[in-house]
Amino acid sequence: MNPIVERLESRLADGTGVYVHDPIDPVVYFSELAEDIKRNACKPFQLSATAVAPGFPHISDGVRISGFCVAKSDGYWLVYRPEDDTFYAFWGSDKENLGAPGIFGPPLYCWSA
Image: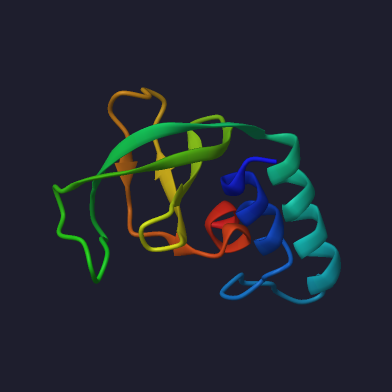
């Protein structure tokens, strides 16, 4: 199996940072998010985006960041960056002109944002 796909799979149970409001059962919600990521998974490919507001604490706005897209759906791209072992959300409908709005962390958190 591809090491990037393995990393995604290993992190699909981590609900850290995911907002869950009453009366939703967090276990059920996390499971649904993981299944949605799996349904929208793709063969990893390189993808870049421009950091935009509200931004990242460690990346300046306007900087191009890259990673490997592992899932995509309707203008939403889940990207893994091996250099910091972190997942990021990229947004936009034009693959060549995506924004990275400062959402990063576990894949469930990024996908739920």
